Image 1: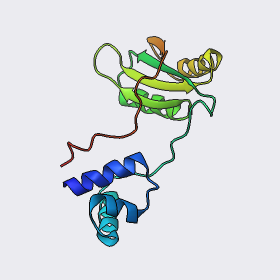
Image 2: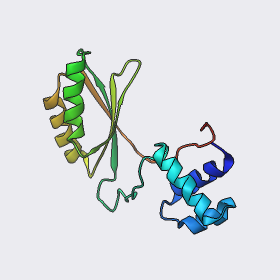
Image 3: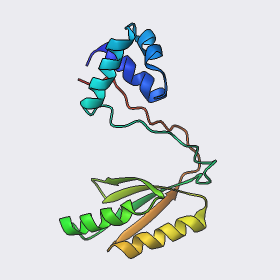
Image 4: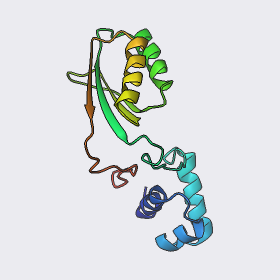
Amino acid sequence: MDDINRKILRILQADATVPVAEIAEKVGLSTTPCWRRIQSLERSGLIQRRVALLDRKKLNVGVTVFVHLKTNQHNHEWLESFAKAVADIDEVVEFYRMSGDVDYLLKIVVPDIDSYDAVYKRLIKSADLSGVSSSFAMEEIKHTTAMPVGYAI
């Protein structure tokens, strides 16, 4: 990983539709070597996919809920079943297994509290949970999909 690849990654993270010729110019390469680098970054899996980022408010899912889950079930079968149930809930946009006092953390986006309640009911129906705690985000202060590329080796 060199500085040119880092620059390419920063550009693509900001806007994956930037033409290769423009990226090449910004990083000081000609088009073909730049394209080869992008292809290499894709083949290596560093660039996983290119997506469109949508406006949550225009999609009417402006409410963000962080849900802390606890369970007494700590076995592979339970986790597989629960992960499948969560994967089927479109409103869950992030799902983490945690260390510490909370077993799992979900980030959920919905239009309103009633919609969250419907998601909540699906969650508690899908798995044996010993605790559910929800926090509603009052204000989004920072949100980015861009990863820091300075650590890449």
